[in-house]
Length: 533
Image (cartoon, rainbow, N blue to C red; front, side, top):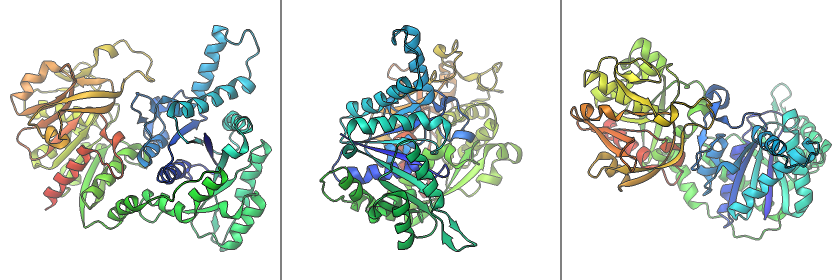
């Protein structure tokens, strides 16, 4: 088994996750089986309780693990189906080691960062490799070289490479090569300092991924090669993509990244066939038509908060050969100024998930606007709940209908907390999480969209549709078109007298891929296009 460790230097947000995922794409297209893993140095056990403004979206895996958004890149760019073993945080490491110490597993020895913490990190790397049966494990280390919290991970990697042998593991370092406008030149010193920091702890990168706004001229490549002790052909330019992140594998292929990596790891493979990927990228860059889609959310200011939703829209747009003009609307603005000002003229309205009562009334107004204007509507998780609340209030006349999340004293709790959630006090990892089965009603719009009567989808929520209100809503044209197999939990809802109005309790965005868009998103864009015409 071969191992690739992806580190980052100079500054954060350079795109280590995207570089790792893109390399995974190229290696898979060479016929290799790849698995990716993220090691995060923060002390949170997982990102599940973090504010999206600080950390971005929480990406949920099939087994219910709440993970870093980079795992979304990994699953979208490759055929990996990841588990909780693929995202390790310092919090998890220390929690595990201290648990062993309390049980007496260390037989009274002094518990230390070396070897106990580093051994735990190494065991998780090996576990991912063994469980996946992959040819190559790509492990990204979060944070920036030099961060104090990242040192145990880097030390573990140093030990790991020594144990598996240098011919079986390499380090790919993603670094910034800034362009100084006043001097009119690219500067290599920050990268040199970053590499020096790695060398201090015994790590020498074999590949440099140079994030730059300007092309790397030969002189700069030679300088980086000389001072960073990296072969010239392993100095890889990674400029900003022109149109879409899905250009990244194509750009890195042109730079010969996959060939270099295979050479360094002594792998003989076929050349990758990128024809399907190129066709997808071309449809994203030059679509035949365009459609305006409003996303009404509460974390609109932060691009990464709805990352998987934006990518799912891109996938579905390409499948319909149309570009997506996203109209990002803050739900609080709708609360103050009304829906029509922000939503008039869009072809489709999407209301994503979220927690807390801020902006909820704006989302409810957006759902009402979509229903009354007959605009295509897709609600996800909280989006389904606000659609239910809106219908209960404005069609069924249930004044003050609400979710007990937002109003515990509401007279009409059409959305209520799950029975098994009522006594939960710990917030982390305690929701209804992961893959659950959905039974789809034959003859419904959902059945038409999925083309089958069963689906497996990923969940992340505490509150559910209150079945006591089922008959009242259904009598007015509300359709429950998807439930749990036992029929007790509502998964999909739609409206009888609307051209295209669907909302789901789960998160379909977590299963959409570039050349395999999720059917809900694909049908939503198709319906929105019909509106546009």
